[in-house]
Image 1 (cartoon, helix red, strand yellow):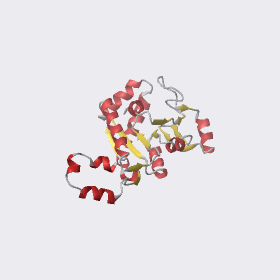
Image 2: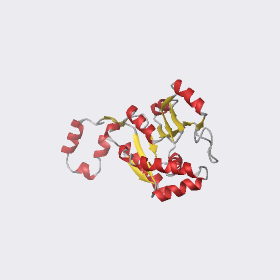
Image 3: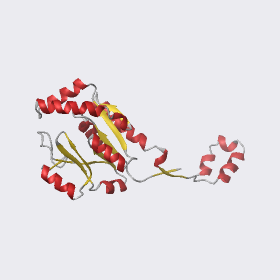
Image 4: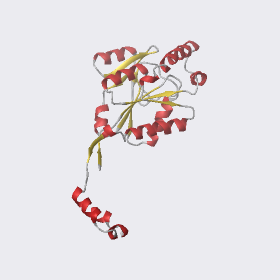
Length: 228
């Protein structure tokens, strides 16, 4: 009776550094085959666990600025001294194919996307506590104390932006956080504004006639067969 819109959903996921949003997204992709992660482009240095082309597309600062001039990005921002941008690429193509697209972007980038695509789903990932977040940053072993301090101060400010998102999920236990985000996405698919059409596949007169028949038809469970 319901015809849903065929287009996919644009899902924006943000979090301060050290909140594990990458792990949450990887878990989502494992659970949902009809989901695609748009790989952002960045000018930051490659970390030990990074996979170029999968974690990020890595370019130099000069290369990034050249791409800006070429109108390559849907949105971009400068975060803690490094550029991050969302390529226009195949995002629209994927959505038109009914594939859900995840954007893993920073707070400022998410705000830019909200102006362009207000109907997108905006999800903010929080750490269980600021102490836990700092421990995770230190555990990475990729940043200096000064850089960790800078990330902490930035994260402290970013947490105050949570009210600009549709949903917030605390990443205390990874599996639970993945399940919660997955549930949000599935619930969004049931929104009334995602229904393209509501139709009745049986004429009102036919149903009325069946309802007026004697109880024998109901006892024999024939009514459903007649409607079909």
